[in-house]
Length: 486
Image (cartoon, rainbow, N blue to C red; front, side, top):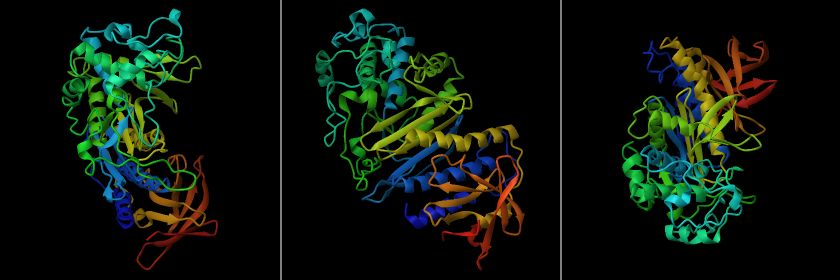
């Protein structure tokens, strides 16, 4: 998106929160609190993308079966000036593990395997040497919880630039005889792409179908995920597939990385998708959690996957069956992240609130999990407020409109004036925690506001100096001037 167009888009988003009539309880997307939260999310995501020099980002917010917001900023391909959108295809890398794990649990529910089965029962060519034979065998449950003791990777250097030479399925199998377990089984958490690669092979062995055919027929197609593939879609190069870019080195900018195919590691890291498709995937999960007879996976099994099955001895690492499970601000979340050459992604779900966020970027060195978490922090309170209101709304204060927009700082960065909780607030950019760093303002006079302190008393004054066009030319605080960005 060009800078002028981007500014126009952000300003339009900030102005969304105008007066709306009373809404049905089930339709919260137009509730003023939700609209102002989405406006804040858009302004923050676009600004943070710029300050972190991320070529392109896409995101989505889901409440139950509704996609409240989806969009993109920047470029899917910088050289072609191809914009990043909600339909841009990204590598989702380790989010692939969720699809593979669902396949395993489908086979478990069909009584074709047990979670305590040794891997060797289903894969006769499994030849990883046990470094601790007395500790027990590597099991299906062990690989889903990353507690099997297996090493992190197959016996190949596929994460190494510049080639990223991922092995074929046969090369993965041939390399097993050279490997041995890293730890005794069921002792420590060790994230393992090798383990989830073997999980995909177990799905293929127990179903009698090639892995890619199985996940398409049993998961991807039934869910209507039209842009999701278990391997990078080479046919979308130069079209909807984003180009991946490097992290920012000490002495330069990001550079494009070569196209890659994950081949034999696909069950662990090969998938590509869009935020639109992962939003659909999240909505299905909220739906399935209410349906014991869901045709993809019943409620009891999905709930089983999303609760903690492994806790490391240090009590800081927890994991479900294929799903990451973590705590933030005393809330439990589940989902998964992905990191492949040139891509960082995150799917976050909070089943108790039926809220999910999806974040995708086409660059390394991006904290995708932080982006997804902050998206949740912005929208979740607004969704709760809208549900609590049950459609009862009040008109937004139109007198705030002239102050909305971006203001420069002499020391770098900027402030974005936006609606928040029915009033005016200033959001600092860049910011890794926009909600907590928000400055809430209360109007006390003509074009004059005061900061609302944490104890709700009033602090220093912010005065907006109006220009001839009826909009501020700048604002002042502590005698310092912050010019408005045209």
